[in-house]
Image (cartoon, rainbow, N blue to C red; front, side, top):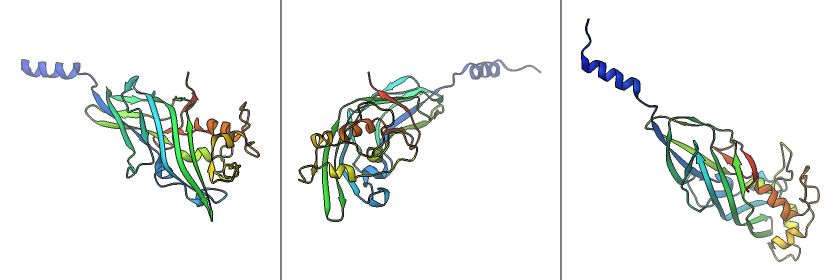
Length: 236
């Protein structure tokens, strides 16, 4: 049986087609702990923490080797109905991509912590950039479809009592006690003048005061797609 020429042409076109491309939308999300605060039930020494501002500068976002144009900063304390904040989108080849990465170059945090009649405020700026690579996630993109790559920031890591434990405690009392002049505000100079006490820095050098402790913990804040980890390192 002979096959019509137009059928042969159609089959040839289908066989030569590419895998196509799809859209990846990048979002940033601070989860409930940033948008709603960290309740006292989640803090080992009973302090409740709320953030009025949690501004993060995110740069050098790449997916499938393609850089995504994103805004300079995003305030993760603003409500997002659980969706996070859209940063940008990019067309990438379809397929399963495991090479996403990003840099957090600055974090500005304002908030209060309360326990009973005690309230402490804080306003901290961290400008030590951290780069996140080798993230343990896969962004699956299908031809003509849309996928999401979420940068997730875990604020509770700022309050961890260890840099190395698999099960650190979330604590605030040591930071509250660093309010040396007892004016209700925990400042960077006060933290820098306060020893880390029982906190566990592991083998980290130079982490011997509470400000250095918080700076070190900022490198642990970045995750992807919820709980997936990345390799974090100081940005060069």
